[in-house]
Amino acid sequence: MPPRIKPLDKNVVNRIAAGEIIIAPSNALKEIVENSIDAHSSAIEISVKDGGVKLLQITDDGGGINKEDLPLLCERFTTSKLRKFEDLETISTYGFRGEALASISHISHLSVVTKTAADQCAWKCYYLDGKLVPPPTGGSSEPRPIAGKCGTSIIVEDLFYNVPSRLRTLRSYGEEYAKIVEIVSRYAIHTENVGFSCKKQGSSSTDLVIRAGMSRKDRIRSIFGSSVANELIDVELEPNSDIGLVKCSAYVTNSNYSNRKSIKPIFFINNRLVVCEPLRRAMNQVYSTYLPKGHKPFIYLALEIVPGNVDVNVHPTKREVRFLNEEEIVQSIVDAVEGKLSSLDSSRTFLTQQ
Ligand code: ADP
Ligand code: MG
Image (cartoon, rainbow, N blue to C red; front, side, top):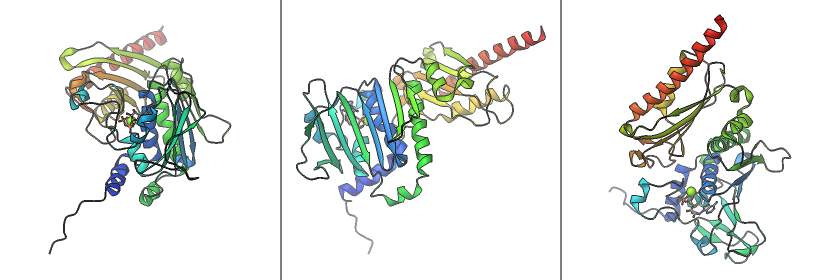
């Protein structure tokens, strides 16, 4: 007799789903930082212990969460950002599925402190498996009033405490922390008018500090140093409605800058941090004629495509994005970068020949 088919327990389903989205502490961090940006924050502070496994604390000065919504905050598929399927076409927030906090609450001990402008005080509460629970010290699971500033603080402790297989596949704390700093760096470069800071808990030094008023070039300088920032060229593409290209702006290094230690290209498509293999390969191809063999440029590129042409829902981690006219769009970017590089190069040859 074949084994009978039975529904899985809801918490088992949720824990498996969580493990598909949150593979490392940096995945949890990314989701929480995106929530802070969605909440119109102007300062986001991150504090990390043991590579994010022991503690991830993200504090923002955004709009906060209504006290009445706190019981729903970590339920799966509860969101303030999407109301109907059609909204997906025009969505401008990072989140829309209402899955991130739910997932995290199934694989960690999550607590929240939040205050809206209308609240007299902040509210603190604890979650486990999607639901409000009493604090570790006991008492009621209801949010309790505490002193606090406007905004939200999300505290994730003991990540993967109940997913031993995930804990085993993690890198060292140092490497996991480096991945966190990398994610924060990328958002800090892209998200103008928002300040970021990131440090290890208890450490007196901060590993990344970006003030809200800093220009994009200064953000790149602060994170990657003057050797990159001094060699940046600004590339802008004209809109092209035939291929659904709304806007493309990029900072890429010229042929003076080359480094064997490659900085992974930073691509944002319609505001989402993505990997885009066709674009990465094409850019490497362009630079191969300008840089010594094995050397790589720095690339930050923000592309905006007609929203209806992009499918942001391809992958649960939302890292992969598909869009219409991919080849044509990649080609027009390649042409623009190539144009800038070659004109700079010929003016340099001209100068050295004088
Ligand atoms: P999503 O971002 O897809 O809506 P999440 O699980 O990430 O789902 O968050 C659920 C909801 O919690 C959000 O829709 C938002 O209303 C609220 N929220 C989460 N983080 C914050 C924050 N930092 N500030 C204000 N609201 C937040
Ligand atoms: Mg979210």
